[in-house]
Image (cartoon, rainbow, N blue to C red; front, side, top):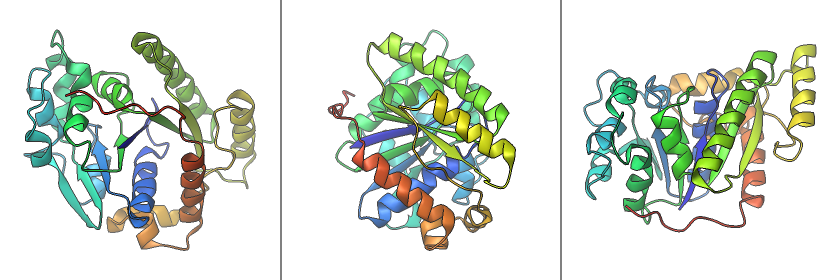
Length: 266
């Protein structure tokens, strides 16, 4: 199992689109893929036409076990997207209460790690969509993942959000006493605007050893795919953004970490 987390401490930078875009391509390549929604806003859950306000079974239930995860529970929460080899673990808006509930609860930061330990042989890839704020949900994703993907919109305010995310990453690596490989993914790039071109140039200068050399361009077909509830590669196979995500996936697969963490312990 390969575990990727998609994160940034700023909303609206393309995290959910990146999760579905890469997940759809992996599933189309024959991989068994699980998408996990760890955002109380439930964007990934809404993408697949479920209402996070009404979810009776969701990732939230995994956090109600006092830091432990019974073996049978994760599979009871998983839903099928309706697309072959592509499942997801939905969010509910109740996740917003976790910060208060998790105070003083042992093991709260390892719930997702323990969940994936039980699912280790069920999936080839797990991609996690995370909330745009530091808390127990983001910490869970970073504790469980083997690779961190950081989508960042090519505009000034998004770059400031990435700086906060990098401080969080350094804190987590120091706490866990391990290196966490990461790639910065420029998104929503518009070569027609000076602001977007300048932001991309600055990103490449600042993160030259950790940035994908290309960028995901602005493409309204991604919004259309979301409205249809379909992975972009199935909705618009020849689209610009789909080709860009295919290029990104190829890059990630050829630059995977040399040391992949072994099976997590439940």
